[in-house]
Image (cartoon, rainbow, N blue to C red; front, side, top):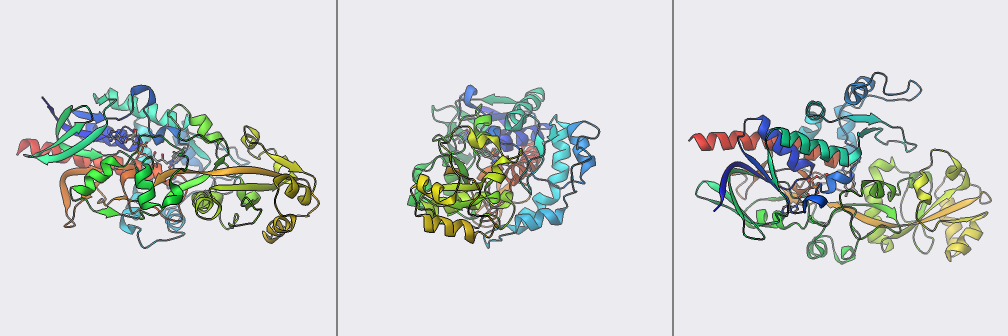
Amino acid sequence: MSQLVDIVVIGAGSAGLLSAISSLQAGARSVVVLESAPEYLAGGNSSLTKNLRFIHNGRAMADFLSGRQDSVPSSDRFDPYSGSDFLRDWLRLSDPSFDRSLIRSIIERSEKTIVWMHSIGHRWKYERTILPGAINLHLDGGGQGLQRRNLMAFFSLGGRIYFNATIEHFAFDSGHWVVTDSVGRTWKAWSLVLAAGGFEASTRLRVKHLGEKWRSVPLRGVPFNTGHVLETALAMGARPSGRWDSCHATPQSLDAPAHRHPGQMHQAHAANRYAYPLGVVVDASGRRFFKESEDYGNHTYASLGAAMIEKANGFAYQVFSGEVVANPLFPKHYFDSDSSYSARTLRQLAHELAVSPETFEESILESGKGYSIQEGWYAFPTRSGLTFTYGGLKVGIDGSVIGDSDAPIKGLFAAGEIVGGLFGPGYPGGSGLTAGAVLGRASGASAALHALNSSQS
Ligand SMILES: Cc1cc2nc3c(=O)[nH]c(=O)nc-3n(C[C@H](O)[C@H](O)[C@H](O)COP(=O)(O)OP(=O)(O)OC[C@H]3O[C@@H](n4cnc5c(N)ncnc54)[C@H](O)[C@@H]3O)c2cc1C
């Protein structure tokens, strides 16, 4: 026997929970979230995150979001970030697959969405980092804090969640969405929200869409985002959107595991190797293959991870002068786990790395960073880790899933990584969560309206 509820949400990541919270605030009477992971492993990729990117007016917003006066030290610059700044950063490497009207509407709603998140209990804190272009306003407690507060807000509004509920099938039948999990439990709802992430955890789909080189790439996130919900939606007529051959991947420490679990947020952050704009990146033979300083690291880190897979077998050394490493703000976690290499001269370092000294020296000098060959040197081995995939569903600005005939599919909505058309070669750090939050909030409100109208007619 299945129970009838107003709304079912598949996936308890941030996008799914924000959608569920928004739907309850919009008047939905019963909202159920179905989550594949067991309770102790729930949280999704969202629980491993750090910050969001959004339009803001500088210091006043930092004070408001942190709940503190003068949260930004007067010695630090903290400039406002406008809608046109955000749009420029998002479209920096524009791609024909981008859904520009959706991107614009996400950017325009980002500030209001953050204020709404504050109203349901979210908080931020200011923390300066050395890397130019970094977002210095962090979610308080990072992704773990984000997901803890999302769950608290959801439960306080009367929402229910089922863990160990891996959704295998859903279909529209006699006016309702009927959702079935892998052990045969079913739920019936007027509205269904798909928030089950991308397809990064499926080897089959990685090879199919990204190519053979991505078969055994380590995941930066959870092993639950298999793309099954995405494929089911496509099979029933949802329109695909975005770059299916492209994904978000970034440089990681050499000992990064095959995947992460919620609860490993600190380890996930410590595995990031994002200081490369201050140094030079070379492949295993010592050859430079990426323009490290072309833009802020925050705009290029996802391209570097992809370039490592496509051009360097997933591996690279990040090379820094001793002066850079000696800066007190250089990330200390570079020394946490990796076997780092150091030498007095570039030639000696080349010898340590077993690469051609000529190629290596040429690579360092061609970077144009004005190094002297004689200063002290460090090299850190890194590997690429896949964060999430870009190909997904086409949705309207209200989160409705668009079908084959270009019309919204009745009662079907989506938010988060399952949405396509948003990202490509130039991913501006912190915008995945923003897109998930804006469309999560919008899809929840739309799903509630649809459920209330349908149940009355
Ligand atoms: C290590 C790491 C750090 C990141 N840092 C940032 C950051 O700082 N800022 C940022 O903007 N983005 C960041 N991202 C990207 C970010 O995680 C996403 O953009 C955002 O959190 C996606 O939210 P989501 O709800 O769509 O996905 P998720 O949080 O992954 O949630 C999807 C949920 O669906 C569940 N699920 C999957 N399949 C099924 C099924 N068949 N049935 C039921 N449930 C299912 C999964 O278990 C999961 O809980 C990071 C990602 C990683 C991996």
